[in-house]
Image (tube, rainbow, N blue to C red; front, side):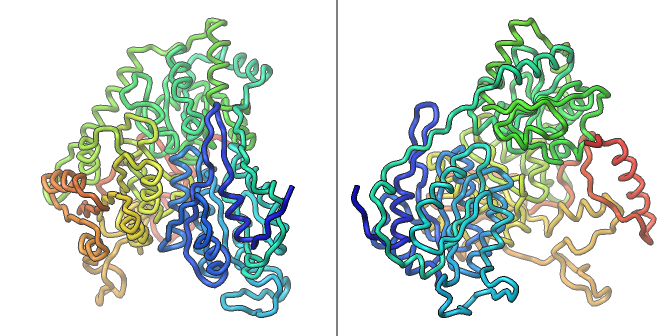
Length: 621
């Protein structure tokens, strides 16, 4: 076997270009390309390598390191973790801008490969521009900040280290149980150093993603538990999407008459009109699903890590003999809530359980008419919220209803933070899998526009809509320019309610009068941010970047703008004025946000008592 003399950066790209994954007999090129912003630390290493010989890797120029990494995360999520982009940055602030997005990937179990530039391994020019000098440990650089938010982290200080490091990195990136952000720190001098790499390092590699079967002993434990349960509830999480377990989930539910609720990550796994679909679960859940959760004697969790929103801070499940069954590829996630662990691929586990339970004649004790009545009651409530008419402006739920009715089921909506995730989880009616793309593991403000760009890269034949509040838009919208540059159309629907109204509502619900969350001018009288709302023309801002934009203050204008935006060839923005506080509320749910035990405010003291009462009733697991 011969050798190829390449720089470390050249070898890295050549290696990435030859990585493939295989699942269910279908082979897919794993690394689609590289998103990057160049600076000292990567411009003459990876930058030169991409310029001279990118192979089949596509390069996309980011405008903000966090934004481009969010786009890469969204791409991998929409592709069910079977394709990824790598992201490269300069050292220092460029690298640190990616840390937030790295955490977003890891929390959501999404693969992304981060290649931040690093300080000189030789140390001769140091302290180099943007270098952090730690007197107790001189090996520390800004890139050490990636360690707690990465599933795998390494620093390449010699060019030959690349070989073993990248093999380990690929193992993590393609592991459905342990995937997340993988960070390979690349000192700028080492990127340019040459080495005689063996040719076999660049051979095509196919990483098989095998479906883990359900063991007989685990199956028997679950079956024995379910045999004595009468009112189980299914919770569909993101793992249903990644496993493509749509049919096995519905077959399981239909066979035994078990209603289905969904987490944010699981939403759209089941069409909203299916008779057993009861809506979102937990803090942002539907009335039907939350009522059933309280009465359920068994919770069958499929591919979910059961975050506090799904469990309503562990207060959603009130049956005195409730037990949990976890179907999850990740052993750590399967151990949540002291449940019976079924560590297996979701589709495989559901098929096996269906066969065994059918053979034993199991059936839930639900009355089909009662389930239908609960579903119908919730559908009427959604219709009511979708039709709310206000005298002096638009309600958020009315706007969402109009948008939902406008779409024919082939579009993809993207959201992440603020009050929109609550309304969308409760109210949005999804008809096809992967049409609802919510980043709610990290609920990262600023994900939405970049995420929509990543989703559109993954789904070029579908219209993609970022649903975003004005707060999130102000935090990060720069990849709109990238969408124009790449000719990749995204539609941004910006709901302008003058601030961080989700947290403003949270304050007021817990005794506060509201402080520091609305976009208001500073008042001369009070010296606080209590003046008029800050007036921002978001449509004009978007037009200044080359985006087709519309300002909406009525339902008629919204309808016109939606139709016009759909006809546009390039990216669009629709700025919709909505009244603050017109989102939906909770439905027999709760979310624990601790209130001060001591306060001069009577309102806060009363809120503390309410919180204490709720906390005492939550499951202590």
